[in-house]
Amino acid sequence: MRGHLGTRIAQVIPTLLLVSILVFCLQQLMPGDPALVLAGEERDPAVLAQIRAELWLDRPLPIQYLHWIGNVLQGDLGFSWRIRQPVLELIGTKLPVTAQLGLMAFVIAVSIGVPLGVISAVKKNTIWDYLANGIGLAGLSTPNFWLGIMLILLVSVNLGWLPPSGYVPLTEDWRMSLATTIMPAFVLGNQIAAVLMRHTRSAMLTALEQDYVRTARAKGLVEFTVVIRHALRNALVPVVTLGALELGQLLSGAVLTEQVFSIPGFGKMIVDAVFNRDYPVVQGVVLVTATVYVTLNLLADVLYVLINPRLRGA
Image (cartoon, rainbow, N blue to C red; front, side, top):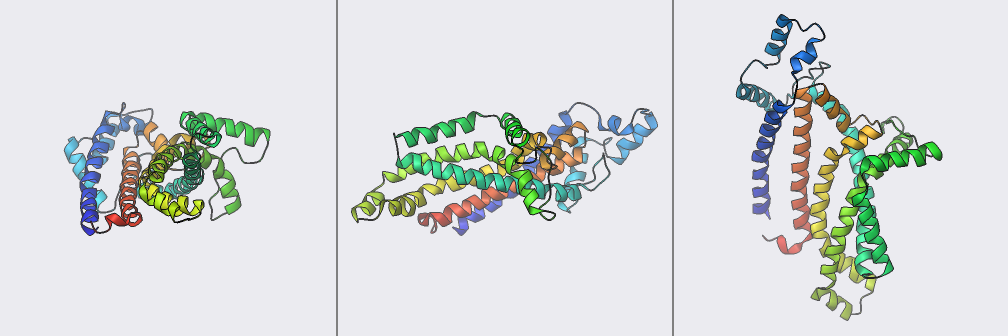
């Protein structure tokens, strides 16, 4: 187990280094000149030259990258070119918002997807199986922005149950915070629930055909015990890995959802940064998102080993 985890940890550093290179280089392909955006309407040549010198835009691309990555390794993600605020400070403000939304969406996805997958596998080829598969197919087929708009019209406009948009921090009013995030969390977790449902069903069908399940039934154990303690525990091994990866994707997948519900999180911040050619913010957000994603992937490997006893001695 230690050797396996050591190998996975050793892969994190080159992975993040490659991500940083890709992010820095690919954003140079974005149309427009950030110096022109920052210079305003006059665009005096002397002002443009001064802005490019201050932002290192007049240096060769490799020099710009080395300057940026050197600061990143010291914990400095730079300043927002647009609002002149440290990127790390901006991320510290927006990350809790997206993290709350993502965790709520993940809880909703697991609460819906895993039970539906178990029921679908246990009740194979029955009305419950067809119903669960129909819900899963609907979840995969429904665009998040459309579902969000429909929920706003139904739940907020017509019924008046929840606020249509906005965000209230947990520290200010936890009830209003949940009220403003439950709808976007459901929208965000909708497709994840469908993916988890289909993978749980597939893994459960395989587990239910194994010898240890037949042995448990032969011992006279209650069917609920056989399904939960024997089949589900082994079926969760691939589902846990998938779940950790999907949790990481929630950070990047929140862009449209946060735009629809006007939530001031990671998604809205990176959209604004792209439109304003605010490269340091784009770089910082993508790098932090990649770090979180890689960390969750590593956590999935740890859980994979803990859940499956056969891998603990590897």
